[in-house]
Image 1 (cartoon, rainbow, N blue to C red):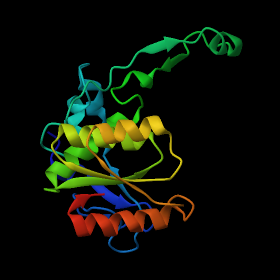
Image 2: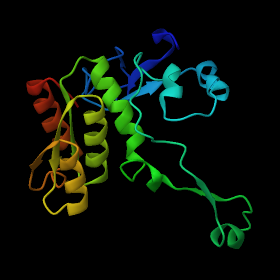
Image 3: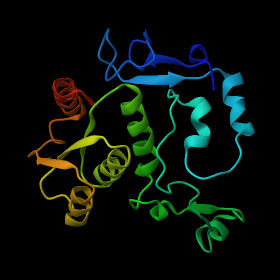
Image 4: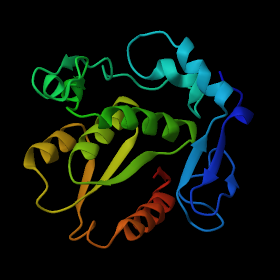
Length: 200
């Protein structure tokens, strides 16, 4: 595992360094937190062997416990038959992320979110979504025995709503949740996550 001192967390707004494990926003300016890895740590990516799931990248993640696995990752690369040749790109491929368990690339992030919630000792996970993220977070929360609360925009695809409910999430319809802007959504999620002891 990469020593925790090798990974740092910085604010994308004020560049303040936050403690690893800080949830939500920058304690100083409320900016978005981002991880930073030194180049020598990133070179370790070349040593990671192919395999199932994203847990094989755990040495670069801010978690020590296994990342839950439902069959995500290793989705096929499909060679381009028209666009690539039309652009003179003979080796253009498309990654078919629809082959992930919930049907989207969001499964990768949802698996890590569940692992982070467990590591932080949280009871559950909360997110706002219009569909794909809700289905993924609900599935990986269920796989990790975590509760899940999804704030969903009314009129979201019914198939994604059914998929989210089928894996046990509680869904609250919040009118105009995304029209208020990302800051308002983030503030709401952080407030509710704090009250419920959920991972945001």
